[in-house]
Image 1 (spheres, rainbow, N blue to C red):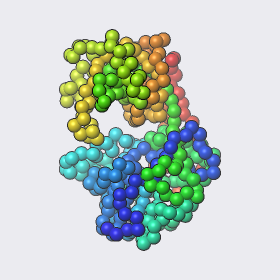
Image 2: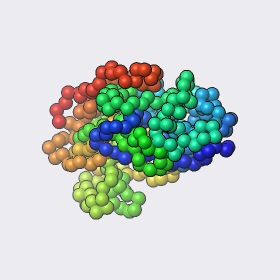
Image 3: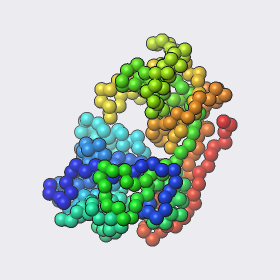
Image 4: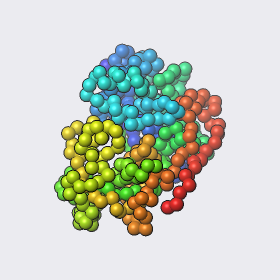
Length: 373
């Protein structure tokens, strides 16, 4: 492989802001695996955000790149799995599997797509030093007529359109909006873009904690919500406490600790069949290899308020942020009904939009399920 820009290249990143800034190019924030694709004829390499290649995990994307991208190019984008009108991040996680046979099976069952949104090289020319306006124009020319499962990400310079996208696209599983300065070169590994994500709060049951990697202090709190049948479901964690606070939490939560094997809604977490049938903490992660995911069970009697951006199925998509304890709430009142539900929006309308109608509005907003906090 001989390209003007050679792997590995860490992708340009974004820093979080609370408002959509003006005077920029705006795109949807795709909820997938960030991927820098290098193609030199039949040779294809897919680099990840961490630098580890993703090539072996997405053979169908490799074939799509050979069929749809220019003969020699370097393109930044996102690998996503989309069906039933929305993105499915958890199905991407299943691809990180050591068995090639398993990867091939999943590639056939739930094929991935590649959404291109930036150009680093084309032919013998490097584009990473050029402003975004030039890179975007060249990318549109290079991908004119591109066919699924490769897509050109919609983009706009209209602030009002970006605001509508922010409310509208979430129903298709997208993660917010990214704003990119128009005159900026591609800055690999630098947080020189801006991301605006949805921010919400939820009251959750505290049901346990994991110890920090540094020792016997709290690393993360395990959170639960009750489903329609009254079962406490594991929905995620909150973390990012100062070290002093981690030590304080161990003492503060000591009175709630349960002995090994004591009655707990998630007592079956070590059983593989139970893990397969329900969302329980402690299941092995393909990302962490042999990392110890054991946890300390607590009596599920305390409620905390956490901040989150959005849900992936029945779980928080990312680590939540601790806000405060809620002594005024009972654990039984912490249900899924309190969560904000985005208005449904078909992802095909995002990916299938022609450039002529990207700026057209077709509704926005979200609805909140009726609940009593």
